[in-house]
Length: 131
Image (tube, rainbow, N blue to C red; front, side, top):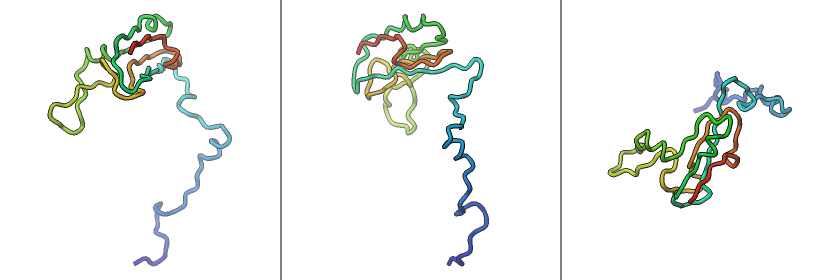
């Protein structure tokens, strides 16, 4: 049975919000606002198709772009690591990797990833994908 008295502590109490004014006035600092020397940015190339075979992926032109520190495709990733294990053990689990290998099974499935010294959008990364 409740006595009607407010419980001591933080639970159930209205708390003053001290962060709101800076967000409302456009003066908040976000992670993307920070400039740290040596920071690399990631760009993901995603499949525009819900279900498709990856026939060819040509990243030669993208690797030549100044500022590209690394570029990784699904086939390259599959050659360097074992497939991901399912969280729940199942018999004969599907062989999947963080990047698409040979096919995409959902739209926006990541098929390549770049690390660069400047911000790139995946639409500006010159990777030629044939699906």
